[in-house]
Figure 1 (spheres, helix red, strand yellow):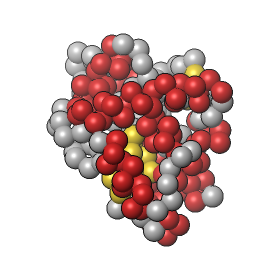
Figure 2: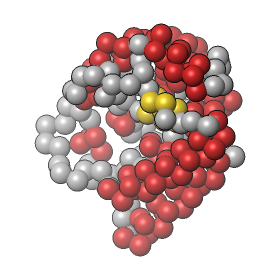
Figure 3: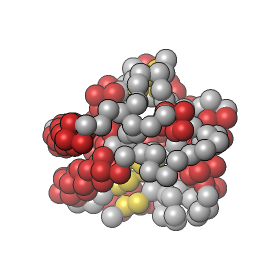
Length: 205
């Protein structure tokens, strides 16, 4: 699958970079502050994740998906929305619905954006309430590598469907099973939901 190929390439590139620089990420199992922010992915990534969801994850997606779509409808043009979402989700302990006992429940299929989030500093500074966040806390090259692999996957998605669909992870997984095939139908659905466009809304390209 295209996603598997891009994910494997990204993981190899990041591992090579870390080895060349002698860097050891401080990210560890049970450290999951990075599982609270707003995460955007493509349709092909959602399609790679969906078959691996267990019953509990699917139930959480059914509950959380509509809530996040409603949040997006209300705040898609708000410049400060992602930061406030992160802070509120962390304060209320409502992480990504795919998190299982402090671990990513779809780790092998996790989005490319998630794979690029790494730090070699104190992981407590990943929290939105960290008192002294340091500049450059996250390693920039893995973030850049993830972006390149995402763009390659986007091109594959355009080839396969004739257009690219980008959206928030829980909402997109919620919509995926009944997502229309054509660009016009997808646009109509997202417009009806009030989540198309804006600063943070779904993008159909």
